[in-house]
Structures are given as C-alpha cells and as structure tokens.
Image: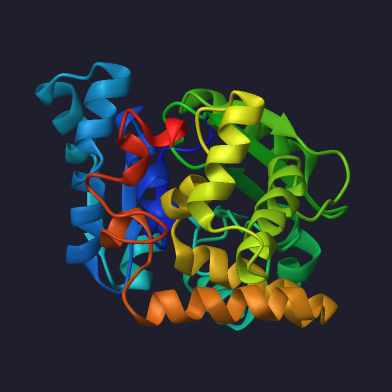
Length: 295
C-alpha cells in the first residue's frame, strides 16, 4: 500500500466519517480541524451507527479511535502525510487558501485529494504545486455502508497516482468508481442534486411543505427516505453552500430563493440532524412515527 499516514482536513459530517473509516481499516490518521475538540466529538458520535450497522464491538470501535489524532496545526498534521483528503466547506476561497498553504507545508511525496461535492479538479489544481499528484476522491454520506468512492483526476494526474488512490479505496472498504471525464457532481451528485433542488423548489414556491413532499415521494416510489430527510442528514450548511455556488454560477432566481430560505434556517440554528432540528426534529423525527405515511 502506497499510503500509510493519511491526513483528513476538515471534520464536518463527511470529514469525520472519512477520518474514522480510514483509521478503522488500519491507517494512521491525523484529523486537521480548527476546533479539534469538536472534531473528536463528531467522530465519537459515530460509535452507535458503526456498532449498529457493522456490528462492531466496543473494543473494535476503540481500535479505530486509537489510530486517530486531532490537531489544529496544519504543519503538524501533514509533516509525514502520504495522502491528504480535503473535506473543507464548499467555498472556493477557503479551498484556494488551504491548498496554497498545504503546498508549502506537505512533503514532496504527499498526494492531495479533494472531497468537494460541487467543484471539479480543474478548478482546484491551479492552487497546488504538484498537479501530477492531485485529484478528487468523493464519498457519499454514511460511508461505512454507502461505500462508494468516486475518483476523478485531470489530464495532469499521474496514472500511477490514480491507481494508488483506487487501491486505497479498496483498502478502506470502498467500491472505487473511476470517473473517466471531468464531470460536475461526479455520478452521484449529478443525479442527486437536481432531485433535491426540485424538492426544495416545491417548498420555497409554496407548492407543498417538506413533510408532504417526502411522503409523496416515499409512498409513490417505495423509497425508504424522502429528499428532505436526506438534506437533514447531509446538513443544511453544506446544502446551502452547494445551492449558493449554483446561484453564483448560473444566476437563476430559483437558486437564490432556496439559498435564502436555507440561510434563515441556519441562522436560527436549524442545521439538520447534527443540530437537533432541520426539516424535522431530532432525536425523535416526525418520520419515525409509524403513521407518518398514513396521514
């Protein structure tokens, strides 16, 4: 295995999952976050899900934690990194600043990858000092069971590096999905984002409230989840970043309406599952009611 020491930069919903999944599968992982204590809490909060879905014992879960360290010092985080996975907010200026710093601090051996949901590698590669060792590696939420890793490079990405990342995906129990041509949203989000945007458009236009949209979708298709349940799970701050970027790129009024409504919720502290309230209330969401689909 080409990589042994892995750094995950940014430990929000997905970053914390990437860090723990990697550590659980035998790698030495450093989680870089401006607030290491909050990062550690997010990782620890994964225990119940991992124990339930993967039937991990307390000892097995803790073995993963033992291979994880947390820091807010980027130079310390990357000093011996073989591979850095960036999972920072979907803001170009944040990523630009990060990659410029990372290029100065990381050893020459280090491969860089972004987990960006909406940006493509050609947008970010210009900020790094090693284009041959840069690509994207995108994960789905709940990576321990929705275990795909979409891998997309640029024309400058070294094929050997691409294969090393494919091998790493296998090593952390992901199914690698090689993307052969640069595509916004990869495969997953190219399909998913238009779907959830359509759902949110129905909401902001007053056509139907979020619970009604979810019920209609679930009953009509037999799906176990609705679009607004998905959005709460991802986190509304992440969703707002995606929609705001779409508005800036396309200047469609619909995107602005959705972004403004999401911002109202975020400003009120309603950020989704992690904050205890989004489109539903947690830990006992309305959709958990056995009669949710019958009313």
